[in-house]
Image 1 (cartoon, rainbow, N blue to C red):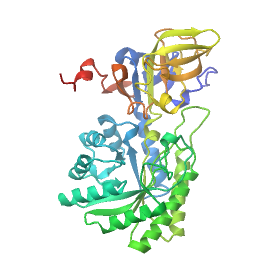
Image 2 (cartoon, one colour; image 1 turned 90 degrees about the vertical axis):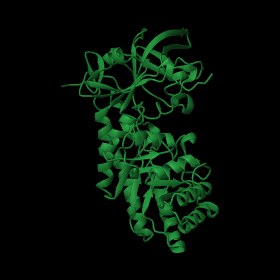
Image 3 (cartoon, one colour; image 1 turned 90 degrees about the horizontal axis):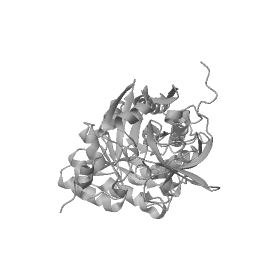
Image 4 (tube, rainbow, N blue to C red; image 1 turned 135 degrees about the horizontal axis):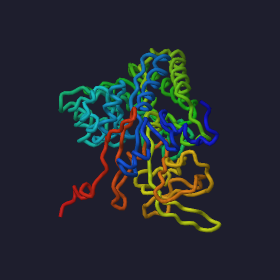
Length: 442
């Protein structure tokens, strides 16, 4: 069947099951117009087929190049119990950065041995919970945490597996707010001034910490593959030097995540196999270069698993036209459920879900409903003429929108549905007014 000439340009940004039928956007066999009728808006729609495909692609692309690879999902992108169960079924481990994230995934019956606990300021309570729940690996970020973890492990008669987080001094060329691997970073042990070496020495001499390997994270989203290779070589050179000084054995190397997704058709992200080629190739070459036994490789995709799998649906409301300046169309969501445009200047595309094949005829700015002038989801986008009640679908909304959402203006956080084969199931209900005051005391 030939593709209609007016098929929307942004359709490939939506989940893999996205189709246009009878002029409407369908995802997972579900008409998004019907989804709005059943669940209201703002509504986040996750496609199960896309989620599972991304999990399987990461596992297969890396393991066929480097069999001893663990794929660990970065929960900060978005996590809830239903998603945790699905990812666990696909064989992924979990990267958590708080006691809250740990509680979500353990409530979903995830094996804690497959959990990596990250974070630059883990509390005593969080580290105690990690030990008590038998979290597989704690990624130690600083000397304060190392001493605290050693003390808590000793108190509990435990021996905790750890990785040390390094800051390798590599610039991944992404937004300054999401760059984490440069020297000027709040994360990890710096390789300059001997901080990382001192961390290895202390960990190796610790009675209750089992130093299994090293970790680094460069930032996100990373549209280049070269930074990974450079950082791997830095980490392996350091590991080889530590082997000679402290009898350190590199059993595991985590290269973090940060794998990009395409938010705009004009800026395609590298395919998974390109990241796999660069990372596994650099690891093998570096181990030969520095005479090291090949360690277990760990990767931490988050955005790249859930980003494209999720789409946000909004309903258009009020319109304001300023002649010769701009036309605003206001939506029933905004920075409360997606703060990324206001925070990072993130750019999105959109589709009018109930007019999916109509020709774009006007340039508008899609404004949120929150009391901030900066609450603009998309600036200057060409769309068909909009009317109140039209449905705007924003693709690639599965990562960091929901996890960074808020109750600003005491608005309710949106509902989330999972779709597959023409069926939708609610995996998070919309908040109620009662939820807003549940924790209040008078």
